[in-house]
Image 1 (cartoon, rainbow, N blue to C red):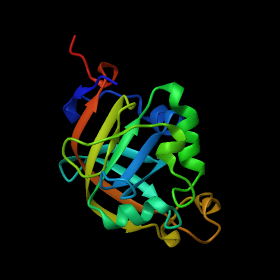
Image 2 (cartoon, helix red, strand yellow):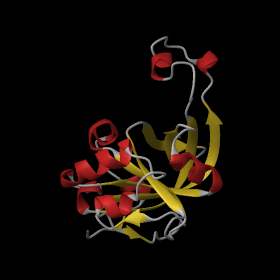
Image 3 (cartoon, rainbow, N blue to C red):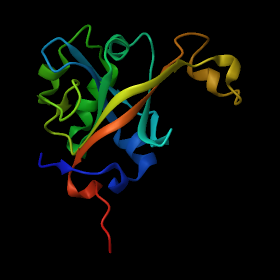
Image 4 (cartoon, rainbow, N blue to C red):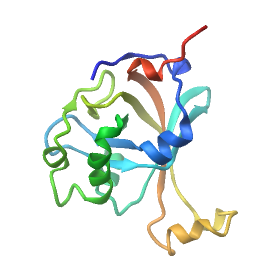
Length: 178
């Protein structure tokens, strides 16, 4: 996929459909076979925190990717064209403990520009992040009673904020000045 660097201030996306319908592939670890894992994520945010562009992700402790996110300082978020939806579905429903997701999906890991976690050649958007904050959700802090139904009292997500260090994307993700 042909991508170029984009300043975070020029990133132009329809945020809710990107997270909720198109999804991201979160990858944590280092770019070497067996040293990273990827999982599909549909919950998160992009914005500004502490005067830094950031991505916020959530990972359940039961997920294999959680181990890599805990052990490594960086992660990537990759968005793909619609034809990769089945690959993203597999990466969100199968564990890297049980299958080789790269081999099974045919996706091609590539070195990132600034972080140790890989991106994917087929991605049309790659966001490279360095962790700057984490916490575990505390159910006592839920203000909406329906949130608990996502957990059944266990496996509360760890939330990570990552400073966005680099973005590469196709033209469709770049703000154009008219």
